[in-house]
Image 1 (cartoon, rainbow, N blue to C red):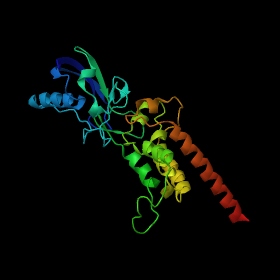
Image 2 (cartoon, rainbow, N blue to C red):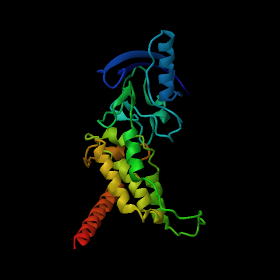
Image 3 (tube, rainbow, N blue to C red):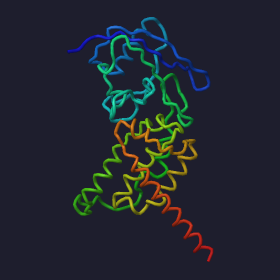
Image 4 (cartoon, rainbow, N blue to C red):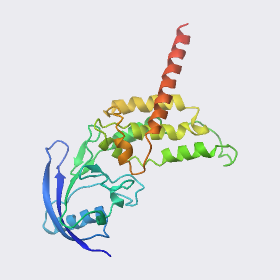
Length: 260
């Protein structure tokens, strides 16, 4: 049975990336526990607009946990207190009447604030563009059963492919590392035969751009795995590290042969 909540919201407000931001306190009342977290913010923004005040800017799109657009740090946790859940899937039934909720944007050098709770996550897209795809010309589309893939490899690849690129792993990491995101993209294709041809070039290119974008190093605290809404395993980081080592070893051997 649903009930209504009265809440205090402490929300980060920042007009643009060059202006210093601050927390602003708002009160919302009669919020249904059946509402999603983003619907609660919609109610707040409607109230602000009625008062001719600037509504709170935040990212969203599908509101079904698919697109990865939504991203808020809620009471210190990316996407909020429920494991395996995106912000848009978080419901107000997970909060109590009278609660104070602190809402912040992703905090990372590579994610500059656009406005309020919106950040620029194009750095992740640039990493993806560096090599997170298959460009080999294979001609026509082959029959689905013509390339046999074991169930174990297929499952591992699909687990990695579940990454929606929201950036929660970056927000959760004290070094703002993107290792879980990058490793998911690398591991996904590394476990499939179609991705073998470009696997060395792929991992070198993606890691290079990851470093250029200002993401930090992996801290090995597993915070990324704990906060990932799709529960991507840190085991994929080990896969990426092995791929990267092999790629560097191959490049070194090739350079040695060229000198000879």
